[in-house]
Image (tube, rainbow, N blue to C red):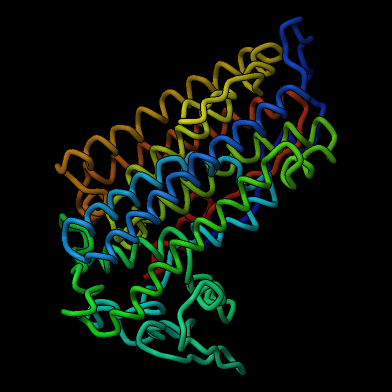
Length: 428
């Protein structure tokens, strides 16, 4: 994922681990072993639900391609939105777990230069971008493209071909796979700017008999390949979190403090640098609707909200999805050893969820879409987003307090949007 992120120390006091005395644990404090087992169980259940929804999406795409019309397209779009709900809840497993963070770009890389994949409106998109030679490569329309000294044969669009597009030429916005590639293929560009609306791709873009915008056969191949590959990627991640999976094995090799730090790194980094900074504050600084995480579908409010839901679930060790899990948690440990710090996290999470829910309710009602909230001069919309940013920052600070109280060491992802806003305010 494209980040303006820098690593920053979790808190000034954390440089001296052990400076904060840990209160004696009460008898009901869970063991680290039990916490980590349940942490893995929550991850396995979340990813299993995510895989199930991705399979539903794949079936909906099959139905759409079998009979491309507005009704089947809408069903596929709805399936995409439903698939995002469990996936976003998993994002708290990033950052601390290298196996997840290294893999994430295959499924959720963003933003993407959509001209790499398909036709675009050149009046708004432009013809070129200096830092990306593939800005308008349009794989769907072209049967070969040059990747530096190599030529990629795209005469047949399949999973192997589109996977090679990710970060091609070391450009992070070259994204060929994952949720956002599928989103673009289902909705098309969102040309509404900061006005109401989402992408309006016609279903006939996939109709072999009444094709619009040419190359409908290749566009169909691309959509199916991207959907199938998403299922493959999620099957791999479910396997990583099974009892003997690579993700659990990697955690088992760490000492107990490092294991606990993994949990808090994920929550803290997603709260601060990623969600508060790159996904929310940056868009307000630039007043740019393309900085909305789900910009084609205009579904960003739900992605942000379910990120927070997932962090709360990971903190509490309780997942209420289709594959429900509940057990020992780092929250219980913190409440036993550092009740004041734990209470601060609980309260911060409750406040953050409320602030992000306010954005979700406003956008879902149709009163004001997330893209509209980003508009310059929209003080009400800007404030809704910035209130969410402030709550997420406070949540990250609360996590830092728990880290200090438990004598752990954590590095939280930073963001120029929060740490050096002057450097990004003139980005575009």
